[in-house]
Structures are given as structure tokens and as C-alpha cells.
Amino acid sequence: ISHWNGSTWTRVNPAVAVNSHLYGVNCTSSNDCWAVGQRKSGDVLLEHYNGTNWSRVLPTSGDPNQDLWAVNCANPNSCWAVGKSGATLYYDGSTWVGVSNGDLPNDDYRAVAGIAPNPDFPVNALWEET
Image (cartoon, rainbow, N blue to C red):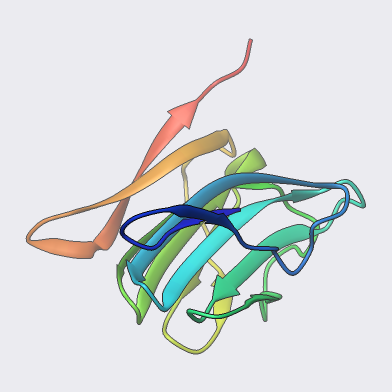
């Protein structure tokens, strides 16, 4: 992972560097970033940056073996992460939890964004592989 300090890029080691694929990063400030992806071992890659170090975080519910491909945070207390087979997680400022997609198909979600005036309401971009 590379970090821009306003004048130069520097490499910052993630918490899980070996056999991992990083697919998405979102920051609400210089000391609050989330990164998502997949580990070759099959479990979720979900990491937080506090301005100094990256640390691995596990969701408290949902499938811990899901691939996450995108993350979007409206603020430090409201983030959404989405991924393969309909994987959807929500962060409330303290924990990540799996969220049911209801009647939506379990397609692969490649992007997520919030829409004003309510950025806490996610819109998933669906990617159907044929």
C-alpha cells in the first residue's frame, strides 16, 4: 500500500502482506482508512489504518471467508463493504457485521457508494459474470 503525505509517496506495509490481493481502499481522514480484498487462504481481507499502522480486523458476523472488492465510508462511523456472491458488510464505528441482501441476487458486487442526502444508504454496483 502506498501513502501520499502531500508531497511524496511512501510504502506502508499492510497488516497482512503475504498472499493477499487488495481491491479497495477508502479514507475518511489521514488517520482513518479501510482496505478490503482477499487472502489466498480464503478468509476476508479487512484492514484499518490509524495514521501510523495497518491492523487486520475480522467481522463479528457474516461469512469470514468472503472476498471483498469495494469499501465506501460516509464518515468514520458508517462504512459499507461489498464483494463476491453478494457479500455485504456494515461498519458502525466499532464493529463490522454481515448484512442480508434481502431479495437481491447474490451476484458479485464490485463497487459501493453512498448517495446524498443520505450517504449511509448504499448503492451497490452489480457485476454479473457470464
